[in-house]
Amino acid sequence: MSTIYTPTRPTQTTELPRRFSRALREFWDELQDRRKQARLRADLYSLSDRELMDIGIAHAEIDYVASNRDSDPRGIRSAG
Image (tube, rainbow, N blue to C red; front, side):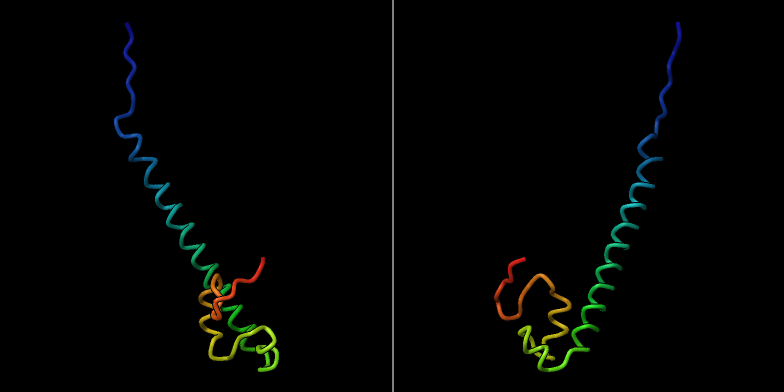
């Protein structure tokens, strides 16, 4: 007769690396999002008043537009 033993704590040894990798992934995604916001903000601030008027925003709206890329300050959604 043989007896097979199984580990008593398999979830504890695998759960920690998963949580760490998930936290690292969330941190990386947030970092990339902030870099995109900073790049967009810099690009918009480099435009002239005329160029900003052509795309429909004012200098006062640049921070809002960079922080809320999914929404339109005028309430108009563009196709794309």
